Length: 166
Image 1 (cartoon, rainbow, N blue to C red):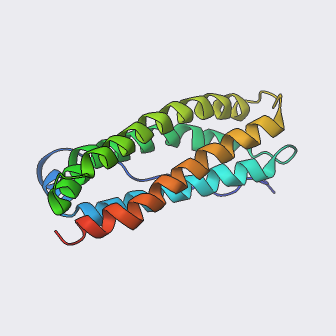
Image 2: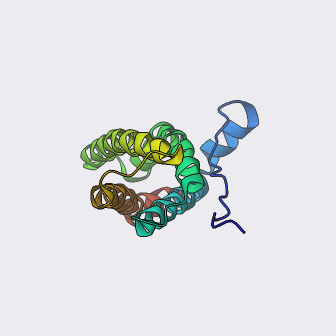
């Protein structure tokens, strides 16, 4: 019997053409809620890995998360920046929102850079490399998933209510 958890694929893959694109532009709040659910699922997986350190690491889960992390974040961030943020500006007017959107865009860049580092380490672990410093890795994983959760919470409290009325 295997100790591996069943790893579900992360599914926020967006098609930027035809009817699908039109639907995503019409329903930015619904798409954003879906994106948040996927990001929070990913955070739970990162937390599971951190909690399993040092001795009960699931290498398959490390590979699954490593392969999903960057594509998911980039896809969600692209959608937010091209559809959600313009809708947010429209809903509340441009006054005072430029700084908020600029901060959210900067957080996207920071999250993706952090995720690059985490991905590299998770791939190595998934392929059998030893974990040199479990404590540092745990802090790194927690740093990433807490940052993502905080970003999602802000968007849920401020951005989603504004674009839900469109």
